[in-house]
Length: 192
Ligand code: ADP
Image 1 (tube, helix red, strand yellow):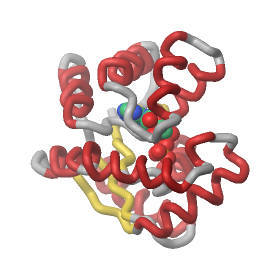
Image 2 (image 1 turned 120 degrees about the vertical axis):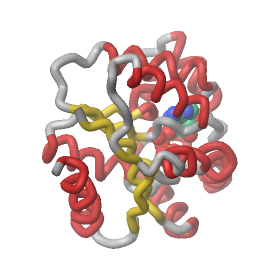
Image 3 (image 1 turned 30 degrees about the horizontal axis):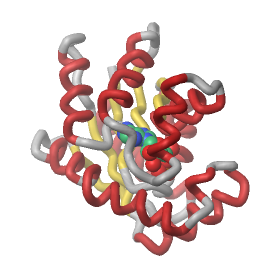
Image 4 (image 1 turned 30 degrees about the vertical axis):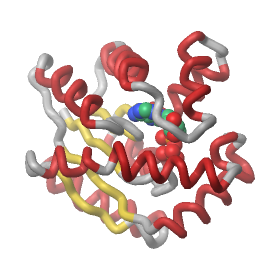
């Protein structure tokens, strides 16, 4: 079973690429950002707690995030594999994911890291904010805060999986098709 982490800073194109991968390889997409936004829309207790952090551009605490992720994986039966988008974002989240998978005799297949420079990220997110309806996409200072969080807490997740020989760098600049092709080549290598 494939377990692929789509990794990269906010606005690096994880969601766009995940959409393509789920169709091509019949994988189940789990985006923690989307899960939180759905909880917020339904005005659940979890959504209300998460919103406080998301609106400031900071990470939601691990215990909230990990619990939600586990529920989602465990309730997804009969799937060929998973794409994790926006998770894990901290080392404790990565450890919790590995522990959960190993209890099912599974493990992460690869972490695919999209590389995009900071100015391009701000440009892309401000542009997305015109239509996304996401309050965290409208204000450059919140976007910069999310990028700081990425550098401070998330970027080490790359090294964590790199030390297990699982991290793969992907150039995240180019057309959507060009980037998909780069990702697909790497996934074909995992399947064969
Ligand atoms: P982006 O990658 O563009 O920042 P996401 O939709 O992945 O967008 O995440 C939006 C916000 O949701 C983050 O800024 C953070 O507050 C929260 N979030 C999403 N995933 C996680 C996670 N794994 N751990 C903690 N917070 C998260």
